[in-house]
Image 1 (cartoon, one colour):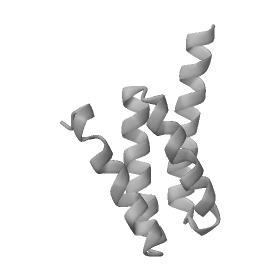
Image 2 (spheres, one colour):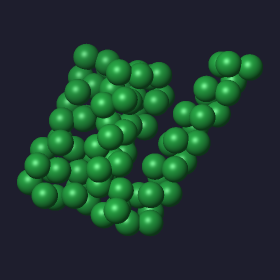
Image 3 (cartoon, one colour):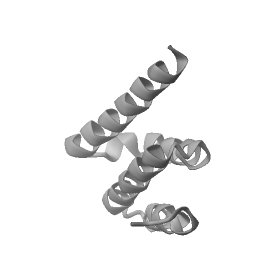
Length: 84
């Protein structure tokens, strides 16, 4: 299991791939890191990653869009539960 101290090791490879114009690989790494941030309820990293995905949304294949939508649905569900 990855601990919080090593968390950035998941996020930084995505940025590396984006800067090298390796968008598919960057999105794959980003979605993995985003899922982990959501599972830890790490809002700081969540809010850093969402704009990166949105910047590359048009280049994401259908499978990655679906995965992103699933993750965002989970966030909304968790927000509704905590506010209700």
